[in-house]
Image (cartoon, rainbow, N blue to C red; front, side, top):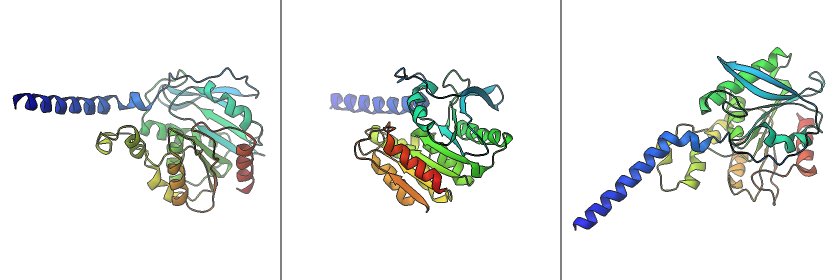
Length: 266
């Protein structure tokens, strides 16, 4: 009996310790600025490296492909939870073929930036990026928000509060709680999570034309989350759900054509 009591006590204590670890270190698990999947892709586009001040002592390293702000819409690229600007070279090599200006920003603590990434800080920085674009002569209608994975939560937050020219979501998740339940089904993630990115609720408030792209083979964020967001989204809405793409989608002619068609419609 004593042995069973000690065993049960040990299990309970271990479970509580795991919960405490996840609660206090969850942002280290969620944000991975040091992860590097750069494949030494050659940069095939002209860009300016700029630093946009969003907060006191916070300047976000960014790449700006400025073709013609008056002729073309400007795509603001919010990247995912891992890697730096170089990790997106292969995507920009393809996106830069379109008639778009592109601003790719890196979050706090990513690409050598100062600061700590949190849901609140990412939202704040994204809003400041839009304000900076307005100092360049743009209005919201000239801006297309592009979210990649974690960045979809930021794009949805902005578009739920203001109308833009368009919003594109690549491999989106319904909420961070829903995503965490996949990886930590044994933990009360609904109670533990501080950064929640509740996109499935916010997307109902978006009046901006939206394109959702999600590969069926995504083993990080299941495609069903993209499908759910699409069902919840308001018209006009468009979709690209290829059978063979995984979380990092193939930037091939089909994907680019879907983006091009979307841009031409908005």
